[in-house]
Image (tube, rainbow, N blue to C red):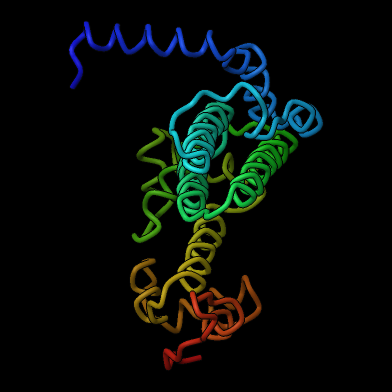
Length: 257
């Protein structure tokens, strides 16, 4: 780890080099205005303030131009994620999106790919925030429930569990949750379990039985029934349609209908 004197010297050298070559960073005010517009779900303003990473104003984080872009995009994703969480986006959802995008950035082999992901990240987050604001801001108790559900999708979650963590009575919480989300607690939990199952079926090779067990379903037949009630197809049919492999081949898992 550099000594304080070494760090001071390095900082002075960077400042001198930046002045010499007229390298500047993005305006702090403009940056904050951009992140704030994403947080508020203001699609039009966000895209007006959107600036490609190749624009002037980027600091130099790597001698390699592609790696430099990647580093800046990772920083941008981190900032957007935290602003959106502050704005009410579910924490687990926000971080999961961040993980997915950062992993994609890591695999980029061209600057064009980085630019494409950059725009996609901004559009995805601002659209989600726009939807969130249009549907109305959720109460702290309901947000607490939603965060708990995301963190415990692998377990059996009950209304009483949620009532305990919010300090509300089960009947009152049930009505509050339904009023703010438009669905019952049970429906919401099952829908989120099915969404998690969809991702596992698309991006992993775990068999249906393992996914069912992981998501806390009592039996595989119950899991298949619930999954079909939301998607209109069985888990096996879903995987056959959407499973992605590097070579584009589909495997055979021998899952039951």
